[in-house]
Length: 394
Image (cartoon, rainbow, N blue to C red; front, side, top):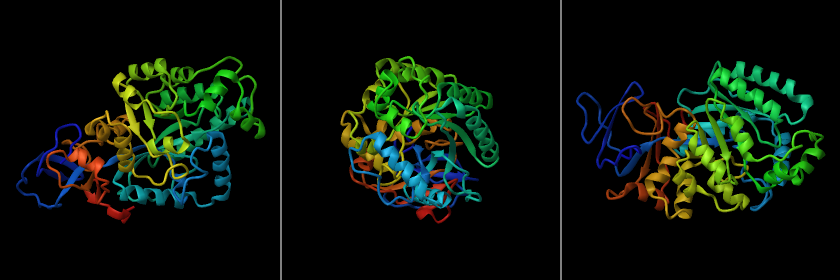
């Protein structure tokens, strides 16, 4: 067993009743049927703190490695126009996630979610995406969001996602933060993702301005004064909980601010970061400062798959100074904490939901390192104590 929040247990046993973990030990409990899983490491289901399931039908990322973010966004816009079955793509993403051992997801939703999903699909926090840069659209965009929240909140956990500084007017962002605070909803915002974004905020020019002007979305008043990601962090910190998506170019002052606010979290998408060729990620520095950092897969528009384990294995290769437990926490308990769900998922502990994943492993000396360095893949997945391997129950 690899509980994450406590040391591994060789030959360990998890006792499950009514979908919850009721005991963890190294022997079977009387009255329970025992299942021998063989040589595996049994972990909590992985948490994908940030993804866009709507792109799950894409066979490969859009563009070539090293593409600029503004150019890639234009490809995303074109791709959205060509798609008609968003619900089918989301279902496909949920199936793929189950196969990859992902049992909790923070998804950016642009439309109504598929209805009648199985209770055995991953738990989803559906962050409703908001785009409204011009002053003229602020009221209509806000009203549309309220209607979407009313419809979605009946069926699942929801949140609010002001997309990015270059697509959301600051006044609209203030209203969204107030709404999140009023309804106690989490938020997620793409921030400090690219150097082009910093150029727009600080200099009022560059490829993002050109992109907005080309789409008749530019508003001269928004960046009349010089801004930094810190200005947006200050706004987001008024929300009950906020995820800073990517954070590739946060400076020391901004990292300190995130670390000092426990309700803020940074979501690192390792292979997407590599795809765009960004500067080296300050992961070790973030963790040293005490910031809560979780892992996401972004989407198949910038990533080959939706495997959180593959993201963690990529981190293990790139950051030799991090130990295996630190890395595994990024895709489990840290992600659960970022989504405000660490009281029920993210680790193997009594009272938590029995979301489990099994990874082939023969090492008893250091199973966590073996999981990350041996190229292992998820073999089986359980949600609420019931197996969903290969996505059959989604």
